[in-house]
Image (cartoon, rainbow, N blue to C red):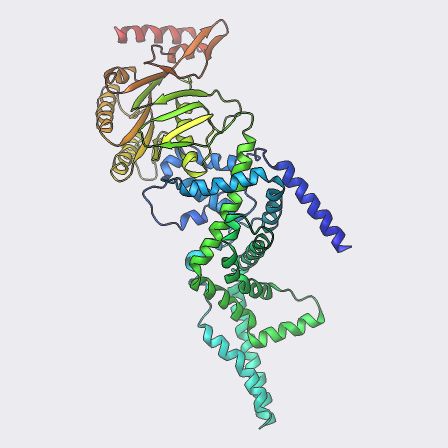
Amino acid sequence: MMTGLYNFLNRKLRRKLNESFGKPPKQSEYSLDSIEMYRLYQEENPRVIDDITWDDLDMDKVFRRINVCHTSVGEEYLYNCLHEPQFDESKLLKREEFIIFLKDNPEERLKLQVYLAKLGKINYNGIPAMIYSSDLKLLGIPVIYKILSVIPFLCLLAVIFNAFIGVISFIISFMVNFVIYIVTKRKMETSLPTIRYFSSLIWCCGKLVKNFKAEPFIQQSQPLFQTFKSSMKKGANILQQVNSIEGIFYEYWRILRLSDIRNYNKIFSGFSIHKEQFHELYKTLGEIDISICVLSFRESLINNFCSTPVFHDEKHIKFEEIYHPLLSDPVPNSGLIQKNSIITGSNASGKSTFVKALAINGILAQTIFTCTAKEFATQFSLVLTSMAVRDNITEGESYFITEIKSLKRILDKMRIVRCVCYIDEILRGTNTVERIAASSSILNYLNDKDCLCVVASHDIELAQMHMDKLDNYHFREMITGDGMVFDYKINDGISNTRNAIKLLRYMDFENSIVENAENLAGKINN
C-alpha cells in the first residue's frame, strides 16, 4: 500500500513539474531576505553589481521572473550569480554545455527536477552560515563530551569490585549527562533545521550521483558526496523521533552516551575541516538547479525569443530586437552603439525602458548567458547605472547630493575595472545652466576613458554640444486624431520634439494652464 502511495505521489510530482516547466513563474512579491543570505557572506569584490545598479534596474523583479529553482541552494546561488558577472566565458560555457544536455534530454531533466523538488526549500536554512562559520556552531569542548560518555561504562565496570560504589557512581554520571543533555539540547534546537536541510541536501546529492553518473556537474560531486555521507547519517540520528516504548529506551541510551551532542559536534567540526569541499558541493548543486532554471526561463520567452550572447574585444554593443524582460508585450529595438551616446526624446517615449533593457541584458549575458534579444554582442564589462536617484532622508542628503555621489562612484569604479554605464537624466537635481555645464564636463571626461557610456536625457542642448564627439539617438511621439502615440522605436540623431506641454493637454488639464504654458515656453525660447 505504501509503495502504491509513493508511486502515486511521484507521478503527481512529475506531472506538476512537467506542466510548469517553461512557464513564467507567478510574479508574487515574496521576501528575498533568506535568499540573499549566501550573497551576504561573499567577500567584497569590485566586479559585482552594486546595490545602486541592482535597485535602479529592479533586479529583484528580474530575479523573481527568472527564479523557478527547486531548492533553497539553487535560488541562493542564482541570486548571487546575478550579482557576479563573469569576465571570461569558461564558466558560462561549462554551464551552457549542461543546459544543452538538459534541453536535448527532457526525461533526464525531469528526473533531476524530481530529486531537487524533494530536497525543496527552507527559509533561513543556515547552510551559508555552515559554509563560512561552522566552527562557531560547536558546543563546548568536544573532547569533554567524549569523556563524559565513557564514564557511565567505567562506573558499571566498577560494580565488579564494589557494587554499591559502582551503582551510585553510575546513577550520578547518568544524572550529570542527563542535565548536560537537556541544557545543551536547547542550544542545539536552533540548528536542527540546518541539520535537517543538510541531511536532505546530502541525500539529494547521493541520488544524483547514483542515477546520473555521466553528466559533468554530477560526476564531480561523487568524491564530495562521499566526504559527507557519514555526516548525513549522524544528522539523521539526531533528528530521529521517539514514537514507541523501544524508542523511549533508545532515547535514554542516547542521553547516557551524549550521542546527539557528539554527533552534532562531529557534523560541524567536519564542516570546519572540509568547508572547501562542502562549498564546492553547494555550488555544484546550485549549478545543476540554476541550469534547469535558466532553460525554463528561455523556454518561457518562446513567444518573444531569446539568444546566447556573443562577446568581443571591441568597445561597442550590437543588439537585434532587444527588449525588456519584464514587459509582457515589449517593442523590440535593433542597433549598434559604437561609442558614448546620448539618447534624447519626449516624455514617456521609451528612453528609460530602452536603456534599462540594454543594462539588464548586459548583466544577464555575463551571468546566465541568456539575452532577451535575437542577438546581443558586447564586451566583458561591469554594468553601472545612475537612474532612480532619491533623497536620502536618513542621512540628511538632498536629491542632488545623492545624485553626484552616484555619479562619483562610477568615475571611481572605472579606474579599476572596465565599465559600461547607463545614466538616466544626468544631474537633473540642479538648474539648467549648471546641469548642462557639469554634465558636459563629465561626458568629456568619460569619453577619454575605457568605458562605454549611454545617457538618456531631455536636454537637447547637451546633445547638440557633443554632436562631434558622441553618437546621438532619440525616441519620438506621433500626434494623431486619437491623441499622442508612441512607437517606442529608437532613431538616429537628436530629438526635435518636446511634448511636456502637449501631455498637459492630452491629460485634460484646463485650457488656461496649457495656453499659458505654451506662451511662456515661446518667450523663453525666443
